Image (cartoon, rainbow, N blue to C red; front, top):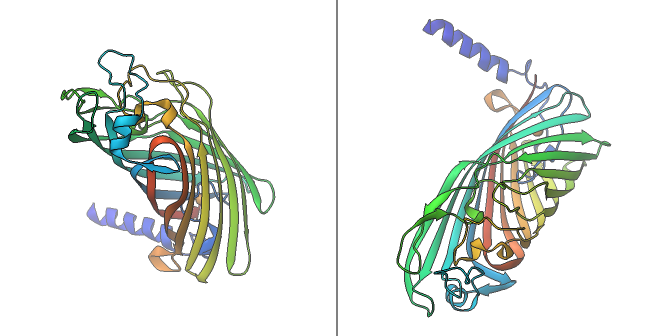
Amino acid sequence: MIKSITILMCSVATALFSSSYAQATVSRPDSHAPIGVMGDHTHAKGELMISYRFMTMYMDGSLSGTDDISADEIATTIPNRFSGVTGQPPTLRVVPTDMRMNMHMIGVMYAPTDKLTLMGMGMILSNNMDHLTYQGGMGNTVLGSFTTETSGFGDLRITALYQLTEDFHVNLGVSLPTGSIEEEGQVLAPNTMEPTLRLPYPMQLGSGTTDLLPALTYFSKGENMSWGSQLNATIRMDESDNGYSLGNQLGFTAWGSYMIDKWVSGSLRVGYLTRAKNDGTDPDIVAPVQTADPDFHGGSRLDLLVGLNLIGQSGFVKNHRLAFEYGLPVLQDLNGPQLKTSNVLTIGWQYAFQK
Ligand SMILES: [Cu+2]
């Protein structure tokens, strides 16, 4: 029994990694965009690709427009939109100080024809946010701090990529609301109580809406360089079950990659993202905190990113890709007060083979 399992595993491994089964030639490292770009490439007929990405984003401190705003300033000057509700203070009294967002993304791509590639992506997210709570209804005495955490499945994305010309393809995707929008957590209220409440929008795992994800991608290459750009959007098609929708989003990115050796390329990229405020509110999200206010969402951000793409040349790692990309925002203009992005890191593994 063990012997036959061993033989089976060896033949599977041989089939997966031997050159007769996998592609005869090795792709260029820069034939994929930097790993932070989604839906950047298509595949040849019959090719299947599996991928895993880990993306981590850190946010630290708040901005109002382009200006920094301190926790004390938020707690004493920014009006609480729920102040008319019993027990709600006139200003925001709970201030997020930083947030860590981790995403694990599993992707599959398959090309039924040379023109058409289909892509599916599922994700698991975890969010962690630290807060300060100010005592009572006014003043700048800090009562204490607390952390909220959420984790689970996010939204599921299905996209069709259609090759228009050698250098251009269009993406038409849909994001399905599989991620929870009813995550709860224990908070520290200004009145010293510690209730468990539905957490504000940035801590939820999904958008709650069916979203359309159109994009237009340009990708071209020379002898040892490649370059491309993508214009993409996220359009909310409906309202979530809890009566709101997150803002529509528009993104533009452009990159250039240089092939340092046949197994490694380096990249530079700019990424611009602009998002509208939320539309409507969840009646169960009522708290004196900026994240509960739909007007304190959205804004725009320009990132500068550096990346590295590696591709295995022979043996076990042949045609396996490993990529890294690290980005820092250079401009942020947020509907705030809102936490500002401090840095973004993406690490990915991709493997394509002929089915
Ligand atoms: Cu692919």
